[in-house]
Structure formats: structure tokens, C-alpha cells
Image 1 (spheres, rainbow, N blue to C red):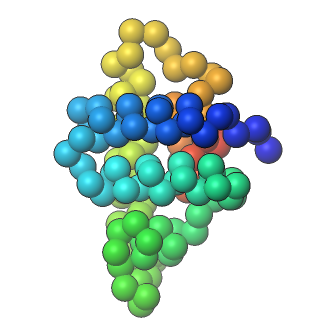
Image 2 (cartoon, one colour):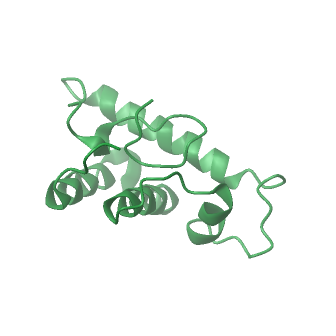
Length: 115
């Protein structure tokens, strides 16, 4: 497991990302990224279950079935796209020492995971 950077640095980076054009107007994407980053910062680096994200972030009922409702997969794809666009807009590449700027690998629901 990788060491978690300074929480103050993570908060600063997260707020900067959430204030960017790609996130400012998207409550759903803001909630998703904040949830994933907060979990890792609280010492839970394991991937989050799709069911948990559906209920906790997307407000689905307890009866939510990820097999028939793709909201989490769609949300994660959109989040990866927004983060990729944000990285591409920077004049220099992402700093490998900043976990909040690392890409989210497909099929995994955790922030800061290495691809």
C-alpha cells in the first residue's frame, strides 16, 4: 500500500479540482470524487463496492441492483473523463507524487490507485 500524502495537501488538491470548470457545475461528480478521496484519507484504501456507491453517492434505494442500473459505472466513466481532461489542460504533466491527480483505473472504485 502506498503512503497517503499529507491530508492538508490532499484537501487543497481536492478543492482545486472541485473548483475547476469540469466539476463546478456537477454535484454528482463532486460528491463521487469527494467520497472516494475521503475514504482513502480515512484509511480505507480498498475499492468501494458498486452497491455502496449507488446508495451513498447516487442516492439509490436499498433495493438498488447494480446489474440492472448502470449509474455507478456511468458515473465512474464520467469521473475518469473529467479528471483526464483536467490533467490534459495543465501545461505540465501530472506530478506522480500527488495521489489526487492519478488516474482512476477502469473497473476499480478507489481514489489514488495505481493503474
